[in-house]
Image (cartoon, rainbow, N blue to C red; front, side, top):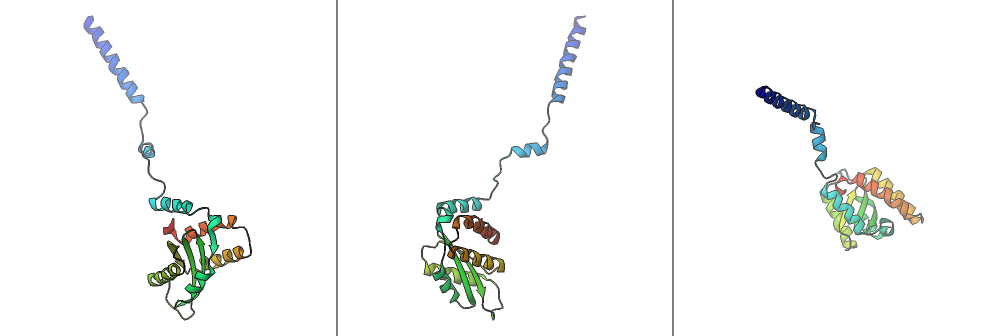
Length: 170
């Protein structure tokens, strides 16, 4: 009788153990992956956002740089240019001469960047585009600023346009 009681206790213990383990919540692979902390933004994007904050408030530092635009427009192949400065960063929209059949090349970007830095040595970074939409929007922002419209509302829209035009700048 003692042996029978011992077997009943052992079997009951095993039954309870396997029942509790079997009923325990199992983790699915999707749930396990959610616990892994991965950066939501690339390091470059985070660095650029810090740089933008370091450059001060955009509404206070955003300005039209007609003197730089005039110097850039004097370069070969370029008909006109629009330049906006935000802190120590220059955004340049260029329109090529009608006779120029090439597109935006690294050589052209380097020439424009060099001319911008020669005209204003305080500029650290230069972004250049001949994208027609970018050129049109830069012209609109320039007119708005020159007509005295508040820059505060323009700065956020301008930065969104820049991030779309220059994805590497994020």
